[in-house]
Amino acid sequence: MSFPVIQISSLSRRFGEKQAVDQLTLDVQAGEIFGFLGHNGAGKTTTVRLLNGVLEPTSGQACVLGLDPQTEGPALRARTGVLTETPSLDERLTARDNLSIYADLYNVPRADVPGRVNSLLTEFELAERADEKVGGYSKGMKQRLALARALLHKPEVLFLDEPTAALDPVAARHVHSLVENLARREGCTVFLCTHNLVEAQKLCDRVAVMEHGKLVALGTPSDLTRQYVKRLDVDLEVDPSQMESALQILQEYPQLVISPPKQEKEILSMTLSGRESIPELLSVLVQRGLRVYRLAPQEANLEEVYFALNGGAQ
Amino acid sequence: MNTRAIVAIVRKDLKVAVQNKGVVLPMIILPLILFVIFPWIMAYAPSWANAAGTPFSNMDEILSRMPVGLLNELSGYTADQQMIVFALVYMLAPMFLIMPLMVSSVLAADSFAGEKERKTLEALLYTPTTDRELFAAKLLGAWMAAVVVAFLSFIIYAVMVNAAGWHSLGHIFFPNWMWIALVLWVTPAVAGLGLVVMVFVSVRAQGFQDAYQTGGLVVLPVLLLMIGQISGVMYFSLGLVLFVGLVIWLIDVGLLWFAGKGFRRGELMTKF
Image (tube, rainbow over all chains, first blue to last red; front, side, top):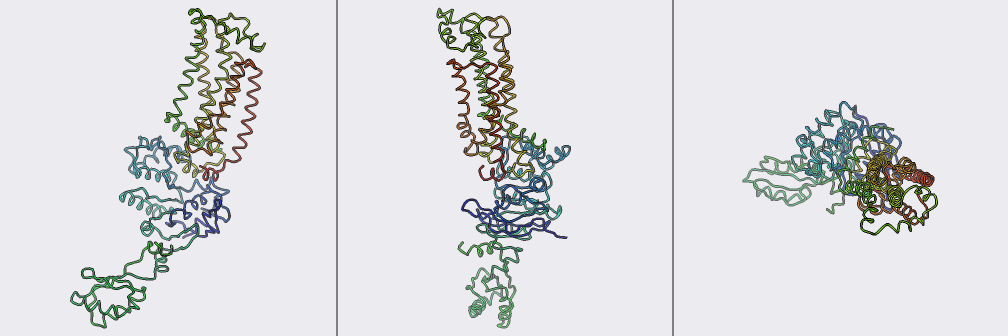
């Protein structure tokens, strides 16, 4: 059964004149991968800090795993893991030292420390260079080590701040599958701060979009695309001999097709005014004698939602 | 208090610090000069001067300015012996305090400002340590290292002084009670002073070097003590050492209380 592990109510944080987080209210359910989207400075990192009791809010409340971050910070942080935006590793120490020291800080049982450290080093493909200083690591290796550190104490809630920002596609895919495994198999709740919209679309059950510290949208990726992206791109494939006729017919229905169709090989691409136009368009095409092989809507993605929310200026 | 976490932070800070040449080199060079080379130079200076036909006539001049208490301490010695005892027992006493001061401030600069420069503090702030544990661990590592290094320096110095002065004095003359009080009572206090001053400096510093340079001003009181002693205004008697120690401990307690009050994760996150 799903229950909220993060509850945020009218949470605000101001730094001088800058309102970093403004009246944020949302819940995150147990086992959910929750995407927290927004451009740089939107308030994502500040929110993570507030939820872990590392920063004090100017007003409002938060409750994580039933604990108040402000008054029960240490108990809370023992059950959460955080991957910070920069890896925040001691580069003069080896990977093994970095993990061992944090295992002590997270109170991992002493007897379990060597085994836990070794298994994480192996899982993140760092075992061969475990005893080298981290300063000589690539960005991707550092990021993987920082992620391993965040998982040392098997946190119930994992906060990831731009986890794949420095990673190559292969390493990023590895992180994605790891995050999915953590959430789906181990029931870990993941709070994923990102501006990688493809990543959010792929991984997240629900997303929140932040702008200038304010929550501007919240829902599942498909809910948000339905809500914010009113137009719909479709591909139409008809009998190749009827391509000219199809173009003429489409131009007669400007209320349905809101951009002139473009012919790409044997396919016509166009934008409809919305999902509701599909049955009507199909009916018209069939009634006019066209042999329709395919009328395929292109699912809108979070990128379009994001740009729609940001005023379409981008 | 979670002692395991405190020990882990101390271990981390010291491990990181000893890999920094800017931290380690002063800790090797200064004791080498002050506590190994200097005793031999001072112990043989009168012989070299006599051999060159330029006896230490200005020693009488220096001693004539000294307080009566110090003159009484030196009264049983020959002129050459007085010069050795004065230089190695009294003149170097305030300079010895530079050692714990320097070590604690260098380590504190690396621990606070260095951590800020390396951007490693944030991960530490997300651990389950309390603010008090974090503060204690950060101070404890630098303080313990400073005291241990100072104690070791003292032992090395004691051996060197007696070995170097043996040809002239023929017996063990170091340490006296003043030095024992200096090492056991004043040294930990001075290490604490270097530490808390550096905590305040590190908040505004851009990085390790910046903090270390600004925090270096903390040696000024020690230099004043040295000048005071050479000019004959005062000398390092047991009473003075106990009094100086008490004053520094009181300053430490006040500054620690003040620094501890402002040591909040949130403050660190915004300032560091």
